[in-house]
Length: 153
Image 1: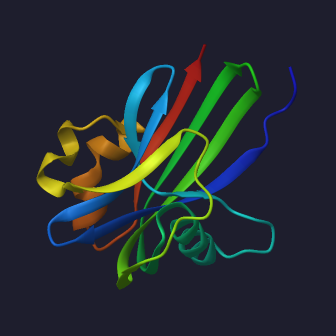
Image 2: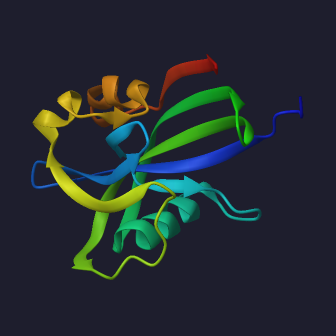
């Protein structure tokens, strides 16, 4: 078994007019939603990562306001090896309502959309730890640790 290497991922909670911006995704397991964002490049600050990833995936420019939460996930036994991700979840605001054409989508992303925030806890938002802690990630003025999860397939 090859050793795990952790990968930082900057995710965004973007709220606007009672809605939250999510990526709509489809995999062999079905449709789901995910917060937009992605992997940090070497030499890139996490705040730069979240801004770049949002522009690439959604076409929106955002301004990070605060780091809302941290979540860690290890998935073992995957075909492509092991996956160890550390999610840094930023509360962001739109820098502009203007939307550009997305330039780079995630592997399973089929689009992005705004869903009602009041319905977000009932949606298939992945990972579930983020969905289950969404109100805490939005409502607290401090960074919260929402846990670690290890999948053994």
